[in-house]
Image (cartoon, rainbow, N blue to C red; front, side, top):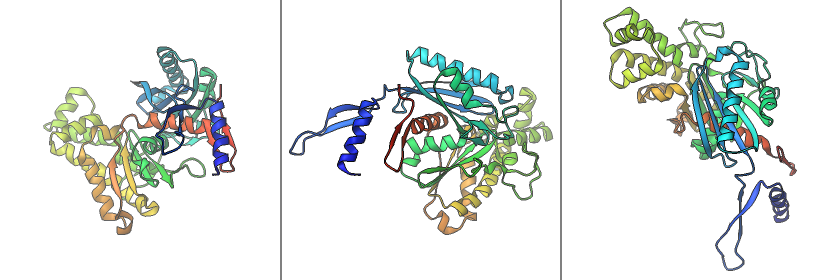
Length: 373
C-alpha cells in the first residue's frame, strides 16, 4: 500500500475510535514515530463455546484479552430456547460485573454443521431440536448487538490461529475431541468451511471393520469409536464383563463411567484403561492419516475436553498411526501436538470471529467498520 493510503485508512480508524495513539517510538535521527494501537475500550465482545454437556462464556476486550469467563454443565438436548436464554443471562451478568454497556458483538460455537449466513445449524446429529433454529437472530434481539455463529471446532481453529500454533503455521488442522469429533481446517491462513459448511466433519469418516452405531444413523463412524462418549462406553462394557477389574469396581460404585475416569485410571497405569485409550487413539490416527495425506498440513493440533483428561498415551497412539500410515513427504515436516489453550480456545476463537466480522478490510481497498457506536 502507498504511504497516502495507509494514512487515509489510519485516519478513518482513529476517527472511528478503533485505533488510539500510544506512546511515541524511538527516534532514528528524525522526528519520533507515532505508535498506534487498537482501542481496547472501543467495545467488548462475548465469546461462547457450547458443547453437548458444557458451556463456556467469556467477556473480552477488543484486544481479545479475557476479562472474565464462566463455565457450567448443560444438556444440549434441553433445546435452543433454554440454552440461549442461559447464554444471554450469563453475558448480561458479565457485562454488569464489568460495568460495560458497550457490547459490540457475541460469537458462539456449536457442535454441528452451521450455515453461517443464516446463523443456524443444519441437521445436527448431536443437537436435537436445534435444526434451523435462528440462533444468531435470537441472541441479537436479546442482547442488542451483532451475533455470529459457527461450528465449535472451526472456532477452536480460529482461536489456535490467533494465540496458539497458528501464529507460526498457516496450514494446520485443529481436531476437537469431545462427545463428538470434528476438525477445523486452516489453509493458507484462511478457515475452510466447505460449500455447505460441513468441511471438517471427520467424526463421520467410516472406520474399517467397526460396527458401533453412530448418532448420525450409520455405523462404524470415527465418532462412535474414538470420542469421549465412545471411550466411556468401551470402559463400561469392559467393567460389566469383569467385575473384578478396577473399571468394574468403579462402575459398581458410580453406576456409570466417563472419559475422565478412564483417563485418570490410564494415567495411573491401569491396563484396561490404557488399552481403551490406545485403541481410541489408533482409530483417530487412522482417520487423520487420510486427512494428512490429502491436505498436507504443517501441523495437526488436538484439543477438546477429552484431551484434558487423556495423557500422552492418546496423543502417542494418534502420532504412531499417522506417521506409519501417511506418505513420508506429508509427514516430513508435520507436527502433531496438543493445544496449549484447552479449554479456552473455543471462546478465544468465538471472540476472534466477532472482531474479524466487525472489522472487514476488503481487498479492493475499501474499509468497512461495522457495529460502530
